[in-house]
Image (cartoon, rainbow, N blue to C red; front, side):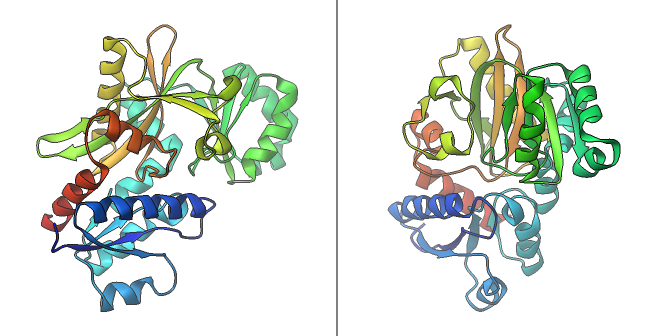
Length: 315
């Protein structure tokens, strides 16, 4: 790998810019530790010129949110013919839109909490309160509200009382024009990373997420050390651990994902595993879940990504 040089794309202009920069720095350090020559590139007006004038052997996308996960940057890389680590542009778009991903997996027979999707315009045109009343009547309480697109749990909130819904809806709509409202499922929250290997995709050990004081795993809990306890591997019995791994691999395959992904799920109290969402560019910060899973598996982050770079170059 010492002859390879790669560009790690990090930063961008999404709400998750700072997290992406942290992921990019950690990934770059991991790759350098296994002999890869790395440059860290932001996604700005100079990106296309850099790709043409200083074409790397491959690009690794460490962008979070926005153009880094919705297929936009991947389309640019495909048009320029630069190999890259990560899911292709079309599958990125499927995974980026949470209701689309949920619908595809539900059609395939996988369990996911019941949901409705409503754009901001519906609340304006039909009146917010009647629509919120119908939402509660349909799904019950508590509810999980989140933007239909985006990551890092920005705008995500649990609503346990109908009186909290208007304020929660405003907070959610601050990060997007459309709300995904799910029936809230209580249980053990886990994240399962999937990596493409020589014999196909395989699941790393699940990571259990326990936010402080029983709260939700929101943006602050994700990126502030000490606010969330993690268990890697998760404290699940063998059957549940097997089920969440199978769910994550199934999501990876069914959505056409590539190289690496992370599936978020809930193991309900009755043992049912419920799919929540999937991420095509998992975080790599000091508090992110993929590096924890890699460590729990006894593997090396740098070696995993070095192998994915070789796969990208050979495609």
